[in-house]
Length: 193
Image (tube, rainbow, N blue to C red; front, side, top):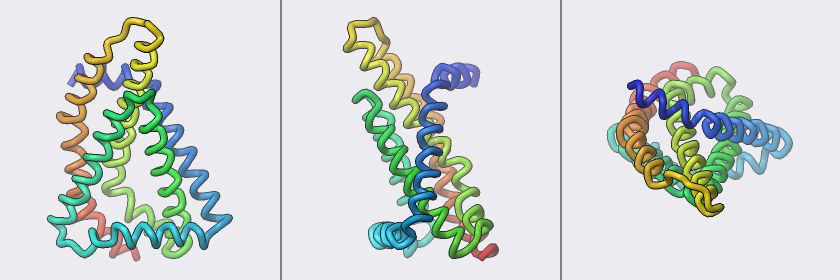
C-alpha cells in the first residue's frame, strides 16, 4: 500500500494535468451543447446507435462488455502515452467533451438529479481509474521525450511500474465500477427518473 501511495505521489503533476484537461473539456462540451443542442443530440444519438446494443444485454453480459471497453481503453491510454503523451491527452479531451454534452442534454431533459444518479455510482470509481491510466501514459510520454533529448531516464522501469499498477489496482477497480454500472446504477437511475 505504501508503495502505491509513493507511486501515486510521483504521478501527481500528471494526474493534476490530466484531470484539469478532462474538466476543461467537460465545461467546453457543456457550453458547446448549450449553444448547439441539436448537434449534441445528434452526437448522442449516434453514440446510442453505435453502443446501444450494450443496453440490450443482460446485466452480466453488460458488465463484461463495459469492463472490456473500459479496461482496454484505459490500457491503451496508458501504453500509447509513450508517444509523447499525445494519445492520452486526446482521449481524455474527447471523453470530457462528450461527457459535458451528455450532462447538459440529460440534465435539461431529465434533471440534474437523474444525471447524478446515472453517473455517480460507478463514475466515482471509473473516472479516477481512467484518469489515472491517462496520467501514467502522460508520464511515459514525458519520459520518452527526456530520453530522446538525451537525458537519462528510466523508461522501461516506469512502463513496468505503470503496467503493474494497472494490473493490480486499476483493472480490478474498473471491474468493480462495471459491476456497479450494470447492477446498481440502473436501479438508482430508475428510482430517480
